[in-house]
Length: 55
Image (cartoon, rainbow, N blue to C red; front, side, top):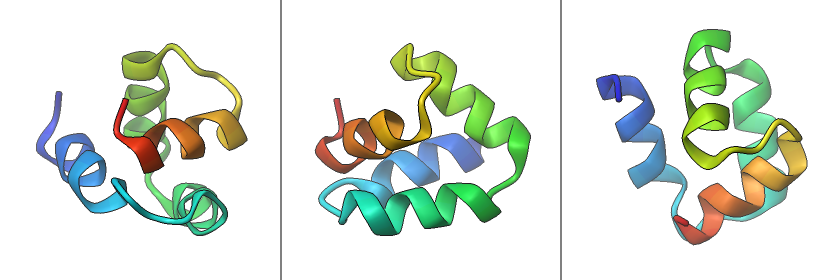
């Protein structure tokens, strides 16, 4: 994983999924795609939830 994606994992863990979704919408598309691939989620809402719990 790139340093930016790893940073997102650490920063978003424990956060509010609604807020995380808003942050993902302004994040670099390459980082969002990397996170989507990491979690196997293509839906931004589900990705935000997964990032909030860190799994």
